[in-house]
Image (cartoon, rainbow, N blue to C red; front, side, top):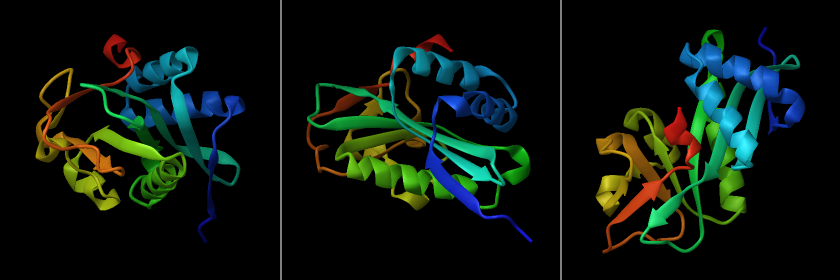
Length: 170
């Protein structure tokens, strides 16, 4: 019998468990170090954890991003989304992403970007940013750089999106 998964806002007491999830899911420490830098900078806008039997098994975070030229509204980046390896493939990541995106809608986010597998993130409404003449300022990530444009703000002018400076430090 499978236990119920509970999605809730993360808090400071979850941080050691979150770092564990990140190291396990990505099989390296880069994402954990990134999240620590984002915490230190106060750059997270939304953080969620997935719990099963009181144990944190997944994590999802959103942080502020910027656009050049500037776009109006709240601009966010989804990163990271992680689930313990032994719990992947069971809908935990999907539940975290869906709840996180709903929270962003409630915060009146105008635009959300993600760098990830198009086949996975398209299920949440992400579309290749290049279709909207929006790109990642750090490099050409092709169709892996995706967006959800909640406010209809993308259009005729090309835009370059930058993540928080902590992303460049990892």
